[in-house]
Image (cartoon, rainbow, N blue to C red; front, top):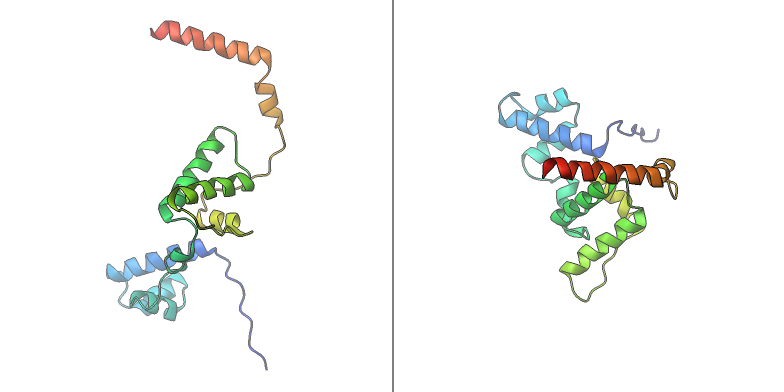
Length: 167
């Protein structure tokens, strides 16, 4: 007989990591008397939780941090940039995200060439689950309608009125 294949976890790695952190917190706060009891309660492998509890292993995020092109602070700045653009209705493309990542990297480093791989944006978005990508048309209908002359004239009229009432 061959090895039994495991079903792929139905939860994301981010959710699994959150479950591990919650289980470790509960063990430290004495909610569970043992690591095995916490592992059972959270549906986690006992060995995984025991190794983390004894600091034999680290999370993938921590273990691979030194292999990433950007530091966590730089990635946070990039995520904030994406969020600000998205709030304005100007969601950046993957190519724009890579260009901004390279700009951030070059502001910190001189000379060497960074390696931003083909799947870097996908991995970046997986590390930041609050961000999501969307495929947009060249010019969305809503944006087109919002830039018509009557709409712009009305906006400036309302803006001028607001300035008069507040001054």
